[in-house]
Image (cartoon, rainbow, N blue to C red):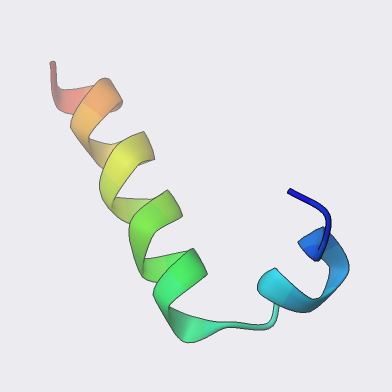
Length: 27
């Protein structure tokens, strides 16, 4: 991701990250 530094401030990015991490943790 080229705009990684900007994407980190995006709420959708964090929502996706939290969803993925919690999904992996619960799996």
